[in-house]
Image (tube, rainbow, N blue to C red; front, side, top):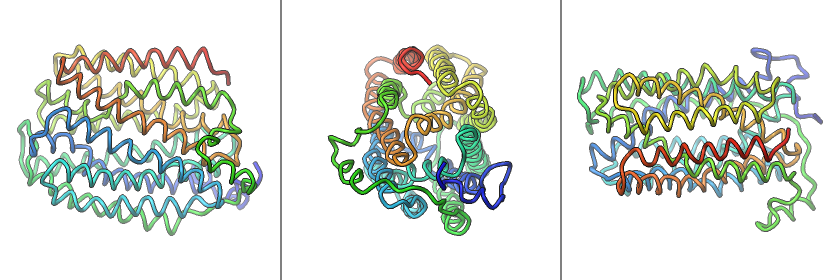
Length: 410
């Protein structure tokens, strides 16, 4: 692989992989500790503290997820152009870190939207270059394992963040079904520190691998939007279409949290359910990545989407507390099977020189589709009932599963 594995030539490996994979995982871990404390309970903050309705919550969730989509495309392409990933990753993580303290002062849903928008801009800048940096740091045979380890560390950060959040919630307000303003402000204050530490670790410990640059002529032509997809394998283009179909039914996870509260699950229990979700997510990510190296990415992704469809059917039909616990655990299995493996699959489908652009397109398509997905979900919740959006998501997941198995060959 050209010189993409520069650090490996020095035989400095952590857990059998290039150190970049491990340290990028630690950066993601710390960032997720922060984000889970500050942003995971935003739907309850909007609903319980600010009194926003489901449609507004869907708008905030969808728009905040979608606004970074264009930046993901551009930052991925730009990292190919300059041959540098790390500097863009540092910029993106820094932007998100600077946005988070302002949630302490938020008093209107529009302000929450603006802060979340700024946080996601940072994510838009960093995500494609970071994923390309992971891919640049491993061999083809290690790709699933590398992304699996990164997702496992990332998700373990979510477990820590939610565990800390549970302690803060219990200490500040004890039990109860709704989130209080004082509790949320404490979550923000404590959550800022790990985000700052993540930026410093990224600056100090992650190295830029040597890699080939895309020829300048190709770069100029790829700037034009109408030629952005030029030069990619048709399998990659079909995969993006299938991802868009799946994502249209994969509304913001805000609604999973709202559904738990809708089923009269106490706040502290909701947070513990999210801990369970992330534990299963972290536990499954690395084995799923290794399995995809052996059996193929497509099969693992399809199985993950089948689990997702069954989980969404479960959320539509659930009526008891034990069922909700089980669904959160299975939801984590879906995430663990698909998130890292899908990123590895993107690297399988494109050439190294256009990997940053490919990740930008992948995340861009997913991000742009999340806005209509979440608005539709909010409308279904208000106009029909909470179960309707989960039936809708399950149906599209099944269609996507059939699509990836019949339309794409590995």
